[in-house]
Length: 427
Ligand code: ADP
Image 1: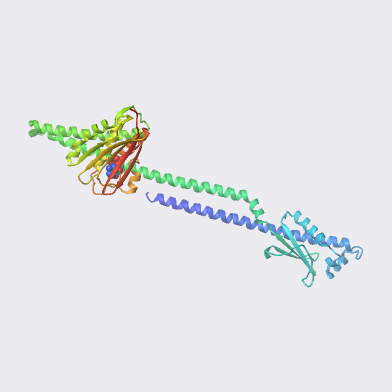
Image 2: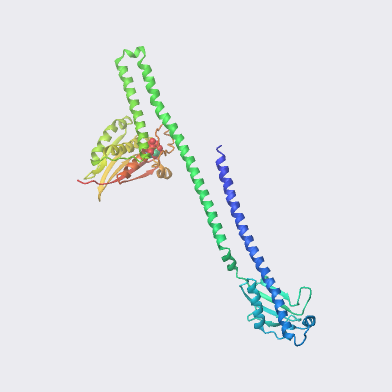
């Protein structure tokens, strides 16, 4: 089933290439047909020219040879053009008329040669550039006979006229083919995106099941222990197990809250309850709640709260959440003793908040994608790092809802710095 997708892409690509090829050869064929039609028309004009010349000859020579049969013989015996004094203009007019009758509008030159192949009559500037457009015609009254004279008609074929005639066809081909290619490209891209989304979704579901299963298993074990005869009379142990249940319950709540946050973002339901907020107060509060976790890892969390006027217009709950998410990540994605720093600065109506860690860092590709929903980098040796890949997409959405910006700088193995820029919100 998985193989069907590339097969379809290959088949459609081949078909599109095939259609392009067929169209091109079809247009080429149409060119060829047009050219053949042109040649037929020229040849027909030549025949008619010959007939016209002959009629004119009979008319001119009727005083010398009144009978038509005799005229024919006379005609064959003589260089009739010279004999009967056809002028260059006369011949030119006849050719012009016949060509026009056959719809040949291109410019032409001509020459009439005698028995010795010498030119007896020639249009001005008679010059043959392309032998393929030089049409000879024996000037005998009909095809079965041979005369001494040959008319050479040279047509300067106007290829652009053919192109102009076929222009709508060429344009329509290009437009329709482009539409097919474009529609195909969009379809393939959509298919790839759908595939990516379905992979992301199944990853997410696996992740979520795992995340919720672990606390559930711990709670179940703790409850089993609580019902144990030995434990039931031991107040200290009951305390330990019930606090364990509470902790796991909290953890589960946190996970569910994260999923809900993401779901709310999905529906674009960010309703901000804006109020004047002291950034330093919020950071201090979140940092206090964090202190224990940092201590557990023997790390440090240092605050450099240097912004002189740290007031912004923000939603307290969302703003606390984003500070929490950034600190949580700084702690989670660390393979050594964590040293986390938070720094605030303000200048030109903007407050910047930096969260710096000495964790695992990330490469450029990861940096460019961490704000995407569900994106999680392969965290190398830190296999036990849990998450849904939702935290930073939430942070970005909230920062942007506050008209702010967030960026990341990071070096793999050395650490990362997240910088938020938010508009200062008055005194
Ligand atoms: P989660 O932590 O649930 O995976 P996030 O959206 O918070 O989701 O983070 C997305 C990804 O960005 C993480 O999986 C991780 O690979 C990377 N990341 C986030 N913060 C850091 C950090 N401080 N250091 C290194 N990598 C990080």
